[in-house]
Image 1 (cartoon, rainbow, N blue to C red):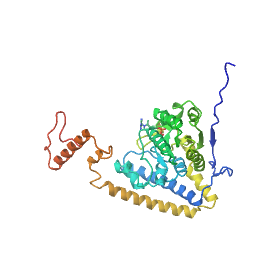
Image 2: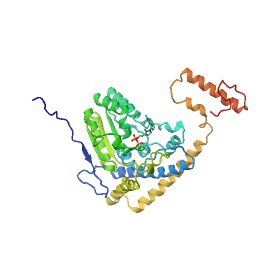
Image 3: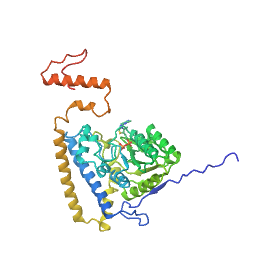
Image 4: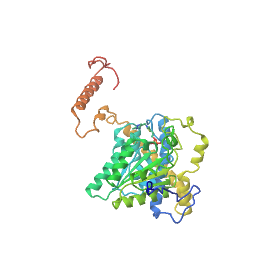
Length: 382
Ligand SMILES: Cc1ncc(C[n+]2csc(CCOP(=O)(O)OP(=O)(O)O)c2C)c(N)n1
């Protein structure tokens, strides 16, 4: 026969375990200890409250532009809860809650969004890369780490994240291709919040799901309800187990919605309706998870109120530490911009550093000391 169908594994599943009415599918409910479940809720709530506080800090000019992670907590915490502390966690910029869970102090993440390089330094012993803003570039780093793990015979896995818009970048395809060809232990998690700034998903791809892109790389792919932390955890756990056994990468698409602006400098009212935002807010991950914990007798109302109070204190203390650090003259030293790019600073940067150092010294010694080069003003702020 001239034309015969080629059988491909095209069955892409959608996984939902805890639905928007907090109804649980008992058959699919993952096994998690009470301590684990409480920990997951703690970090979702901490991120939610810190996010709300950070919006105020930004409006008051105390931190810079930042992307809220509201609505992304279930994917971030659910997936990060499925890896061990020695595995690798490679975030984009909406994995605030997962980074807190991994051990990043809140004050460090505040430093990052306050514009200090020190906020990009993972705490000792935490196998994470810092926030990554050039979209999809972190996926190549994750694949590289995964390939290194494989070559070293290490059983660690790599968990990495990206947005739906990032899946249109070449980096996304290169990372998935290499990871699949070399069967690297990488779990690619898409935070499909249906927008890339103002560009809706329908302008980003012509497929029914993002998960089906896994088929073209010959790897498993699954779509999960991204506001269902149990479904995210279960799908990630399966992928982690496979990766640890040497069975290669997985693509997980978490379907959610960015309930707030893209960043603090965006106005979503210009490109979407309040009804749509309202609909997705009613599917909020925290509400349904809280109801699940209450139904199981793990967290009653008084325990939740105490947790809220504990978190409020935790945030207050982190903001105090951040502002104390941000006021430190040494941290504000602009010469630091040369310090963290290279293990050995190249000569051209060393020259620029010396030039700036002299300039700063001349300014503190009084104006007009440093000679202006042609076209430059000696008095310009660095
Ligand atoms: C390489 C690169 N190009 C462009 C940008 C500007 N930019 C910032 S966020 C964004 C949209 C990203 O959308 P998506 O991947 O869906 O992530 P989301 O912000 O929705 O979480 C773009 C284009 C960037 N950060 N990096």
